[in-house]
Length: 400
Image (tube, rainbow, N blue to C red):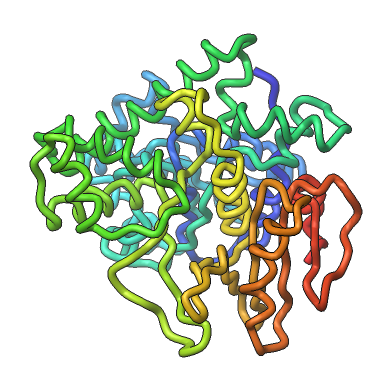
């Protein structure tokens, strides 16, 4: 398979080299965590030829003797070299029984710079502080961005590239297949293994049918405001008996595993977060097509999903904004920065344009406001609102 340098992730790792943190690379299954580790190790070796790089890959059968924490701890200790930087890389760390004891023990020696990857179901962000006594630095990997997609296929026409990315998605493992049927089969297999293996195994789920129906419901309702009660009612009406508590647990498992991302409601006028109703977005928009098909393409929702994941990839917290019963697709926050964003497929008619800009015009503060749509034109201003083409925005991080 063709490889490209995932520059932003490598730069993030380079920025924490030498810190005492345990670096944990997380993210959805098959998002490239192991490949990133390989690339980063090669980068370190080139930049510091004296560095001692200790690598354990539990996907390699040769590492099976180390799949117990005493053996892993002793192996790494024996590989230590004095008077040079010592880096420890452990891939699929959860395959070592009691791995957290080995990692905590190695970290306590203060001799090693430690980097680990693992199954997203076993290295949840919420679990890291419990698993590891030392401070952790988590880097969440996402599927390929639009820019990475273009780089992989060596594309220069951003509009044509976006048409391909819309249906192809960011799961790079599917790129080796030449037809859409094989691509979607691969993507569906990735999602099914994520659900049926990792989540079912970790949480000992017995009702696999309910979990699959829930995935289908959330996939078919991306970007819709919904509640646990409405999900429960919808599934019950389709003869899948369930209660709110179970649905809440299962949704939490799916979000913990990066299959979906929950976006909370935010009252713009009252400046407070609202409970009970949320939006959900897929970790990669291609999962929907792989599971449910492409017959009824809803381009607007697909674009909104792409923008949601891109905002997260760029480091924003995102919320669904509400003001005077009007909805703003995203309130994006990062430090002191705030952006109000509407996403649309087509704003060429007066009615659709008015529908998208009218909620933004009611916001009284001075933070930037933006409509991202498939205009295929240069950015322009409308009464203080920036109108930006989707492909241009995805391909240029400087556009705000």
